[in-house]
Image (cartoon, rainbow, N blue to C red; front, side, top):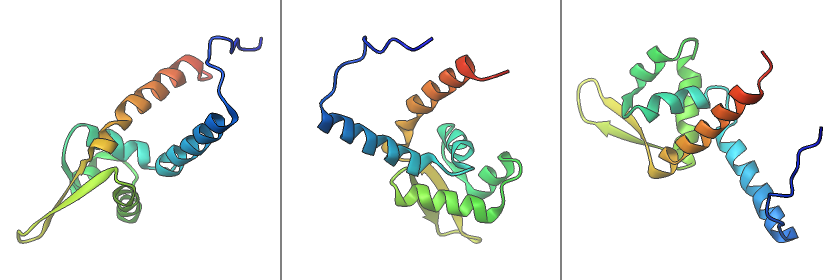
Length: 117
C-alpha cells in the first residue's frame, strides 16, 4: 500500500533541492560507523577520551579519534584541553551537536516502528 503524501506541503523545485542538499549534509556528518555511539555518550555530558572509549565496546582509539575529529571539524563537538600531567582532554557537544538529539530520537522512533523483527 502506497503512503498518502497529500498531508505534506507542496514544495517548489528550489525548496526540494535545498532539502536534498540538507539531508546529504546530515548524512555526511552522521554517516560514520561509530557516530551514533559517540553522540549517545556525549548527550549525557562532557566526557574524556578514555571514558568514551571504555563505554563503547569494540571501538579502537583510531576510530574514536577520527570520529571526534570529524565532529569537531563539523562543529558538532568541541574539545577542551586542560594543562595537567598527563594532559586531560574533554569533549562536549556544541549547541549544533546537542540539537541532533531530537533528530536521533525521531530516527529511533522510526526504527522501532518500522524495523523488521
